[in-house]
Length: 349
Image (cartoon, rainbow, N blue to C red; front, side, top):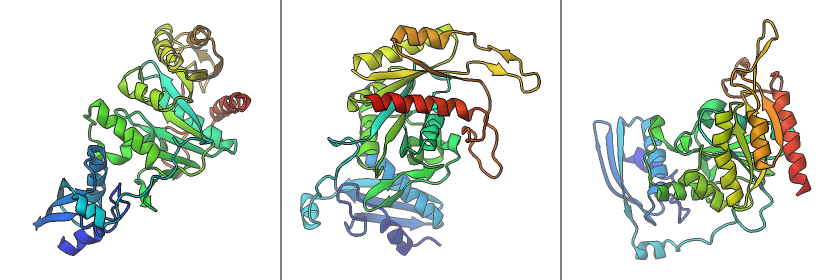
């Protein structure tokens, strides 16, 4: 049965994102009612921040439901200046991936339109880089169309440790996605400023540790979110994904143009769904035509890093990860070859 003590126990495990103390220490609970398993509570944070409130609401709600709550409604207030002062004030900021002197290379994976397999390329390029012995993080920055957790078969959510969000580790990668902070696959209906704050959280509030590379799965196209990421990461390198179809290549050129305009270096082009090879006959069919990758790389004056065929990843016994090409999959060498080219290019900079 849900009771006040269970609520207090949960609040003890949830951190105020600005004071870095748990909500029991900050005396954040201002109102509480429990009726027939329905929990209503008002929580005061040290700052007004809708993105942080959303994250905490999801965390509190999921933890209370694990303890038996039927439904959870969380309302938010703000601690007074006196309360914040008595708690010791705000701590000094710690270094993040965006701090000066970071050694992490940012690799943004972009496309002109959806449906070209950009997220599949992001996931499997990150895995291929890890197979080369690199420390790799994967940031699913496709805020509206997040798919990385499902592709990698990730079911658990990030934990809070030492006042930081810990990425979920899977197959040697450190992963953060908007999907971890949305309950029951709800749609994300936000305006630009809130999305920008969420991206800041991904960089500043996550304990990525030491990374050689952070691969970013960007939203398709050249909208506000993609532009915001470009502006936040002035030294990011970029890979453009297209299919062989000339129209897809034409649209992808816009993403390349935005990278150039924001002073990002384009590492190259990956042509996804380049062809289909029959497992029975070995015959190759160019389902989406030919030449799109070459056309795009010529237009952007960069290299064609590789062609990846149209195929479904082989299932690995006992492992659910429908978007992952494991190292023994026939397609994995194509990604390994691309990863080696990327490493070599970055080592020359």
